[in-house]
Image (tube, rainbow, N blue to C red; front, top):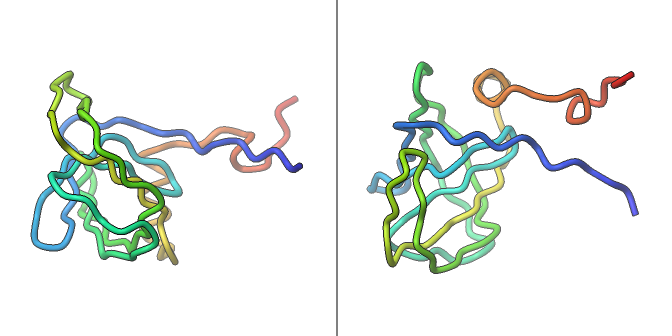
Length: 119
């Protein structure tokens, strides 16, 4: 089995996601996907346009595929807990170079993620 390190996830205060015609809370984001808290569930495998509203960055338009949807109390980066929500895990689909650059800047990267030697 090939080991692939999990991309670094970052929780950002004040970050939100536009999903369909609603605003959802961004729990954390990585270069490959986003975890959000929403008041409704979505079908796993469905694809949705998302607009990431990240601090100190222009809005980032991406497409995301729902990888996981589970009912949960959602803990936000500011410490608030929103009850009776759904955690929706999205994997980004066909990121534009511009979106990938913003995500790399916001999330950073490690040598293991980029394939660079660590020693």
